[in-house]
Amino acid sequence: MKWIDHRHLSSDGPRMPATAPHGFWHVATQVLLGTIGITLITFAAHVWHPSPVVPHSIGPGSISLLYLIVIVFVSRRSGFVSAVAVSLIAVVCLNFFVLPLVPALKARNPFDIVATLAFLTTSVVITGIVAQLRELSALLETLFEEAPQSLALLADAGGRVVRVNRAFTRIFGYTPQEAAGRPLSELIVPGELQNEVQRYSELVFQGQQVDAETVRHRKDGSRLHVRVFSVHVSLPGGQTAIYAMHSDITARKAAETALEALSIRLMEVQETERRHLARELHDEIGQLLTGLRLLLKPDAAGPADKIEMRFEQALTIIDDLLDRVRQLSFDLRPADLDYLGLLPALLALFERYTAQTGVGVNFKHQIVEGRFAPEVETAAYRVVQEALTNVARHAGVAGISVRLWTDADKLNLQIEDQGVGFNPEVVLKAPRSSGLIGMQERIRLLGGHMAIESSPGCGTTITAEMPLNKGTAG
Image (tube, rainbow, N blue to C red; front, side, top):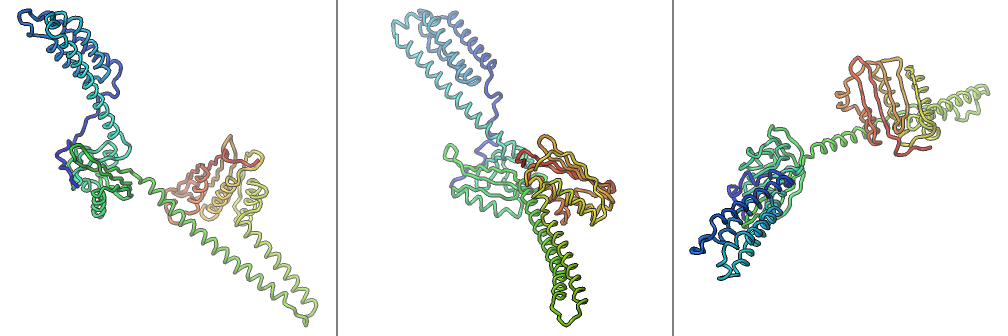
């Protein structure tokens, strides 16, 4: 595969058109200038009209050539339509003002008139084609420059840059003048990935397309994730080059990394809850069941009052077991949330929370009658539950305020305490912040929004908005 030397291609490339497309006044101005040019030529022909003695001193051919110069000028300045308009004016001038001055021409060779008109018509067609090609070139230039992805045209085996577009400058920081003539790998490829670029080049040399995700660096040294698409293209004259397109996917990669970290943290939380449940079952409920088994073991030789006492102890253990099982069930999934709805479930949660922690809950609500979509009720309940848990562990307060209300299309929730507070940016980046991140993820999956406002010593306010227009149970 033959690669061209980068010196054979202009580093500047084709220029952007001054205006695209041409406006009405621009076209009208060019037609006016062309008409003036045709008029001046016609006037000169009348002033210095051919002499009968020297019939060939000036004639339709010479005047047609002058007309053609004007037509080409108008065509290049304004395009095909203007060239046709000026050409028609030239034909009219030729037939009505110039040919009558050459009576000998008709007598000798009447076909000269036809030849002259054919010459003018062909000239118009050619200049029109040139104008269309120029407009097409301007369109391709615009597409190259305005493409949202970074584009680089590379030449020769070293992958030297011929030209780059605006997106390349925006993403990587190099101007077209700085990039021209330098190897692309030298500009944006980290040192440890040079072998990768060489492998990609070999694939493109073989006529294959390259579509891969990798890492590149900017002019200032900062790195970014990109999607690279490289393709081999053929140029006029049998020359070849490479188009390399880079799309910035740094934001997407960051989101994927954050989602992966969240998944890991959620699995850790799940395992922690499983360990807690297993410990409760083994240490608490298991011991109670063992004691109950011993109390209910037959002992016919014992006195009746002793048997009665053991029976009462067994009943006490059974009552304790029932309470613990209900508590475990409530922690896993409160039945009130499924059968009664969000408001009764929250009231039951607050009652148990205050009894267990001693932290009072000031609950205010303004809520419409009926049920919400199950996913909305579950998300709101879990956000409140997690917030209450965090207050009991970290806030160091005797009370907390919870507000719940609805508007036309949203369920709004606010949890506020006047505790020790924290720095949300620092805490959310900590490895053990899965509770807060889980709250945000629940709200985000519903298409809602959650904000955390806090600072050390100034308390914490958590506000959540959840859309209701995606399903509300009546």
